[in-house]
Amino acid sequence: MKIIRAILSGIIIWILIFTAFTSMSFIPVIKDSELQQNMLLWIVLIPITLLGLNFYYKKEYKTNGLLLGVIIVTTSLILDALITLPYIIIPNNGNYYDFYTSPFLLITIIEILVVTFLYWKSKVNAGLNNE
Image (cartoon, rainbow, N blue to C red; front, top):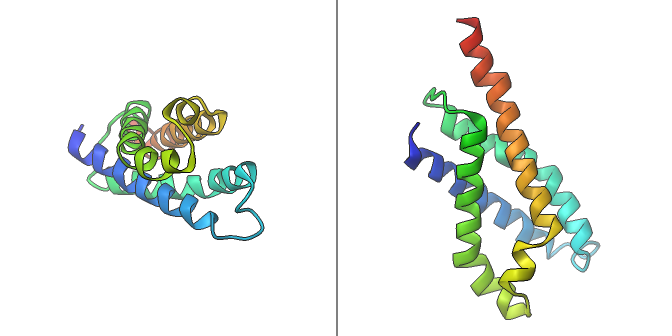
């Protein structure tokens, strides 16, 4: 496992999620609905996560998908603590507790873990079984 490459994958995914979520705040129909924004995010999260996974597994590493998913999620949560919360959430009357206990965030984390695991199981682990 290459930890630096795994963290870079997490950074790529976080940047794309951040960009997607920020862009949604400019769409008039959904800009005032946290539920609609999150539902749209959950849809675009699949290709975003796959893009980050393609970056990581491009070097043909065989890292367990669940372990990689945990590193990606941890990287994203740290970047949220350092960037998203202090510069976006807190100035808009949010706080760390509400952000990290949000059911929307929990669903997002689970989705990233599931997509990462299934990608590994179908692409990487399947290749190991065929050898």
